[in-house]
Image 1 (cartoon, helix red, strand yellow):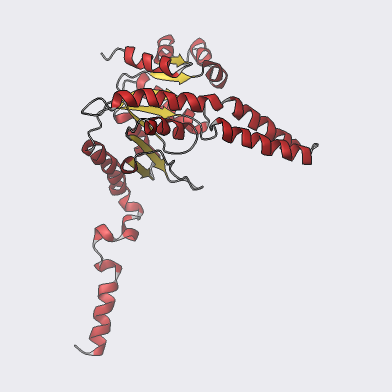
Image 2 (cartoon, rainbow, N blue to C red):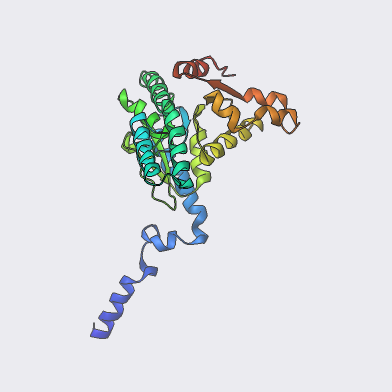
Length: 278
């Protein structure tokens, strides 16, 4: 082989066309390969959950900003300092007001942790794991729920999502059950495939999106019959006026029965245990 042939051969070996399709990241990222990527996002978590004998889950949703009390108090202290430095600044006063409101919600972090603790103690007693806690894998309420499972050495699941701003998984998720998604649709599917209950704590757009997705699927019979429990009636009565929707005729009165409320971890767990399976 002469020098020109040797150079030519090296170019061939280094070309993207010669790379195995399964190892060609640029090829897999093409828009035409979207169906393949979606199938992979369906199969990868599914195969892992089967391997770890996870039969059913409890989904815990809630806001990333609802943190444990100490962290919430630190936010208030920082905001108070800003107001002292700039007492006439509306933005500083707004930040303090919001920080105080989030501090008032710190108890929900404790409730989520306690609830996951209760459910996970039950989960670990079964040979095929039932009622395994699954969250979005992020901070706030999600962290609290994964932490509650961690407290009793139980496995829990985190379904993270790639976002424009970096989202790091919380450290309480079982490492081999922490997954990262690109597609919200596939992530939502995995939230609900094995769900035996949905417990929703105060949160924002993401929490509302996931709540209404589940409600729509229950309303239309596309989701197995599961309890959808809203934690903290006072918050949810202000956030969403479900009775108004029924009064206006845009949902049926019976649709209101898709929702129940809880104020304590034990109350939420009791509602799940008492929920009719047929």
